[in-house]
Image 1: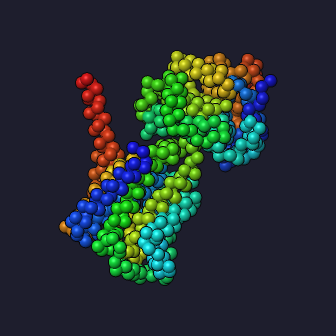
Image 2: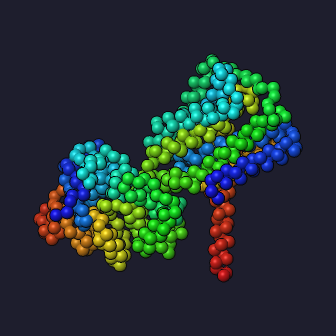
Image 3: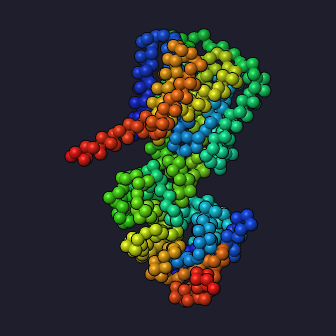
Length: 320
Length: 245
C-alpha cells in the first residue's frame, strides 16, 4: 500500500478507536487510552533510530520532557492553542535530536547509549534549576474549561494523541519502505559496508535522530495538559526510557508493526496492572516480559510470527 | 597511452608509532589490470582503505579523474566511481541477496550528476547484475546464509552495482577452490573488458599472474617494485621479501 492510502487507513483506525471510546464515554478510559497511544508514538519514534538504524537511545525521557516543558514555556509566555504547541515541541526536540546526533553519532554501541543517557541527565539537571518552569517544585497548568467539538478536555486529549499515534505509525512505515529506510537498514547491518555502497551514513543517521526526536517531542508536548501538573521527576521518568525500548523489543524492531504491537500489549497490560494491582507493578511487568521475550523470541512477536510462517511454508513445500 | 585514472602521490599513514605506509606513489590507468602484492602487514589493505576513504592518509595526495579526493568521505568517493570488495565479506546480513545489491544501486548506482535512481529501475538492474555474477537463483535468500564463494560473488555484485570506473578487489579469492578462483577471475576479466580498471590484491600467485598487466609490490609500508609481471617477479628484492634471504 502506498504511503498516502496507508495514512488514510491509519487515521481511519484512529477514528474508529475514538468512536469506540466515546461510545463507552468513560473519562478513565480516555485517560488510560491516552497513555497507550502516547507509548505508540514514543515506541515508534525510538524504533526509527534504535530498530531501523541500530543506535540504542536511552534518552527518550529527555526528549519527552523537552516536548512537555516547551509547552509549559509556551503556556506561560504566549499561551498558544495545544495544536500549535505540539508541532513547536516537536521542532524543538528535532533540533535537540540533530544536535545530539551531531555530537554523538561518531560513537557506536554502548558508548552512544551512555551518551544519550547522559544527555537526559543533563537536561533533567537544567530543568530542576530553571525556576521559570517551576524548577524541582514543578509547574501547574490550568486546562481550558471547555474545548470546541468535544465533551471534555480528556476526550479532546484522547483524540489528539490518537491522531499523533496514527501519524507516527504512518511516518515510520513510510521511512521503513523508502530509500531512506533501506539506507538506515544498511547502516544497522554494517556501517562501513553501507558507506562503501554509497550510503551517506552520517547524513542518514542525523535524519533518523532528528525525526525520532521530533516524534518524541510531539508525544511530550500535550503531557502538561494531560497531568495538569508537571515536575522533573514525572516528565523525566525512567519509565519512558525503559518502555520505549521494551515495547519495540517485545513487538519486533525490524518493522513499524513491532512497536505498535509492543505498545498496545505492554501499554494495556500496564494500565490493567495499575488498576488491579498497583502502578509500582508496571516496571516489574516490563522486566518479566523482557526476560521472557529475549529468551523465547529475541526478534519480538513479529519475528516469532515470521519464523512460524517460514516453517509452515517450508513444510508445505516438502509435502507438496 | 590511456589516461591516468587514479594517482596516489607520496601517501603516508601511521598508527601511533607504527608506520603503515610511507611515501607511496602508485598509479592506475583507465582500463588497466593491476596486481598489488605484498606479505601480510605490508600495507596493502591500508592503502585500499586510504584510497576509498575508510582511513585518512596523513601525508600525500590521492587524485581520481583529475580531482583530489583524499578529503572526501567514503560514500562521495564511491559515487565518483571507486568501488571495493572486502577481504572478509561484509554482507548486509538481514537483507536478501537482491536487497544487498539494491542498496548500492539506490545510493551509488546513479549516473554521474543524478543522485536518484527511480525505485522500479533497481529491481531490474539488480536482477541483471545477479545474473552476471551467477547469483540469480539465490536472489531471495538471506545473504547471511550464503557460502564463501557466493559471499565473494555478492561482494563483487554490490561493487558492480555502484557502476565503478575503478574496482579494488581486496583478496576476492581468499579461501576458494581452484575452480572457484577461475570463476571469479573470469568475472573480473569480463568487468575489465567492459571498461572497468581493476586493482587486484591477492596472495594466489596463479591468479595474479594470469590477471595482471602490471604488478606493484609493497613491503613494510613501502613500494619496492612496480612494472610488468615477469620483471617484477624476477626482481631480487621482491624475491627476498617473499622467500627470505
